[in-house]
Length: 218
Picture 1 (cartoon, rainbow, N blue to C red):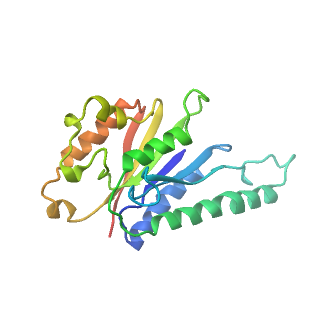
Picture 2: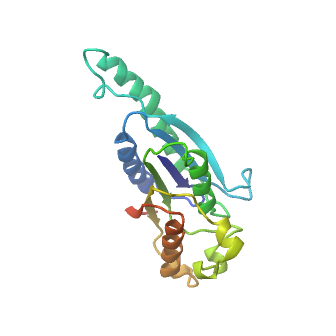
C-alpha cells in the first residue's frame, strides 16, 4: 500500500487529526507482511524538481494478536509491532501533515513515483492500494487547473506524460475540502476536476477508485 499526502496546502489541526484517524485505521488493518510506503506531494520548484518525495517504506510485522501462542511470545511480537511499525508510522504521518503551503501541487507526479517505486508491476500479483490525501487540485508544469487545463484538451505526448500505471490497483481518496475555495476561484469547475481524475485513473487501469472521506481543511 502506498499513501500519498499532498503537503502543498496547509490544513488545520482538527483536519490533521481526522486525516490521521482515517489513515491509521487503514494502516492498522493491513495484513501481515504488507509493504507500506509513505510519499509526499512537494513543490516541484524546490529541492525535489520531480514534485514528489519518498518518506519511508516498511513492512507490517505480526502483532501479538497475529502470532501462535504455542510458538511465539505474544508480548514480544506486540512490542515489535508497536515500536517498529505503529509508532514510526504515526510519527511520520503527523510530520507529513504539519507543513506550509507551496507554489505548485504536482499530485499526478507524486502518484507516479509511488506506483513505480513501491508497486512495480510484473514482480508480484499481490493486491495493491494507493491512498491519496489531497484537495486534488493539480497544479504543475505538465497540467494545471490554474491555467484552465482540462482532460479533454490533453492528447498525444502530454496525455502519455500524465499516465499512471495502476493496473489492478485500488485507489482511495481522502478529499481535503477547502471551504470557499471555489467561490474565490471562479475559473475552477468541480466537474472539470472530477472528470480529469476519473478519466486519468481509469486510463491507468485502476480496478476501483473512490473517495473514502471528505474532510474540511479548516
